[in-house]
Length: 227
Image 1: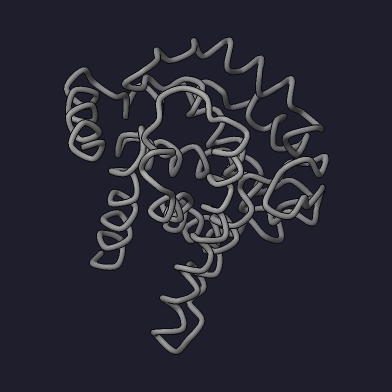
Image 2: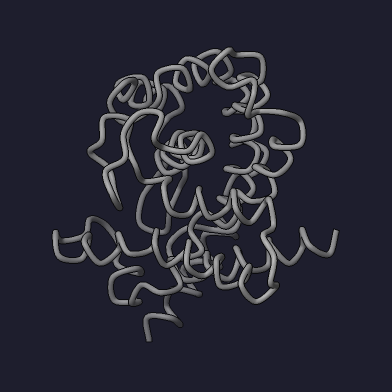
């Protein structure tokens, strides 16, 4: 229990430094759990998606963007699209996150299973099935399963969530974008799982929706960080 609270506290600290609210952490945790449970009997995933690994995925998912603490505020807090130069800088959050988690393991002097999974997710959740992602352009099954699951969860949440500077997209439109990325951005079988259980995603999003109060708090937070 203490370990879980510590992880959420670390992840929440990272979230204070961008436009996401803390609810993003909870939503992506439960999206990944839903996908993992649906795929646990699939021939391609059953060996990995055991009950113990699904629990580790749920525990490690909040650390996926921990590397954002190393990105300059002038870029991270910018509303709207990044310039190409700014985007190149933001890409570093993947390696920064992996390295921060590795440093924690080194300090402990031992490998920790859920932290090893957290490193995979932090480093590879921006990779794409067709090899066009970053940081290293992994493709297909070379991308860790944990990161492939997070890719779908993270993109869906980015699409449907309200932000200080934008409204969220309707669930049905987000579904269409995820489906469009089948076989290019995302593992086809994980997209098929998403389509089977998309109502669970909708329910999770509703359960942990960002209220007006959450967005006001975030706007005030960003104003302080922005100087």
